[in-house]
Length: 322
Ligand code: FPP
Ligand code: MG
Image (tube, rainbow, N blue to C red):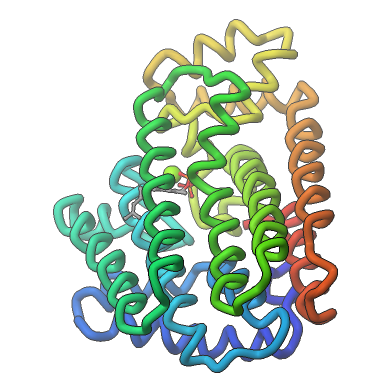
């Protein structure tokens, strides 16, 4: 299922404008445009769309009020991916060559910094106020802490609680902040702000668990990145954690994932071992439970069309293939 198919007409129209704004934001500098356009083209736009849906959930706000922040959210996300690919020395993202592979890490760091700075320029120039800046700053700080936590424990098996802390910092807080910002910009009451934040949080946890599954079992042509990338860079995720707790071959798997060097053959072995356990079902069941909690938190006071789109996004997150 395509994420955009989950959107109703009004949201799909927003998406068109958003695309133009994102292109406009990177077009100021020709090298930045050349470096970012292919990567930006492949994104799902989940973060800005969550923001836009929540911002327009009671009444439709003018584009001038919503588009700069929606664009900034996508730019922050893209900046974090550019930096993430440097850290992981990834060669492919969204089906295209990464900036670090194409231009080297030195230039790629600066491309990420540029996108990040552009995002904050958009926010500063559009008078969103201190509360919005605080939510944005905190989400970026959490993103960094999550990434640092991950990179300080490569090739180490995390406990379930460490895994959850990491995916919360890396993904759930970002998605919940997008919803929260939408609620803040449209001046919702505190209860609706908190409920939409909780919706985004459940959605984010499920999103990352499915992402971690797709890293092993996704179709490379659809995900746009090679299999086993997490294992190769030493990031141990839920499918492995579950298989280690239940597999007859747990000791072989443990040796393989903690050795410090993972070959393509090792990835195939790991996939076989994981596949022979209930890890895939286990991850899906957990993701579905977070989606259920997201759904329960959706405020009843939203426009029907927006509630429907947010419900459909929840379905998309567990059914997605990329
Ligand atoms: C992708 O997830 C990466 C992230 C969610 C966050 C990366 C964050 C940073 C590098 C720090 C923040 C930097 C800036 C400029 C805001 P993943 O590695 O789980 O997924 P993948 O398989 O798509 O790489
Ligand atoms: Mg990564």
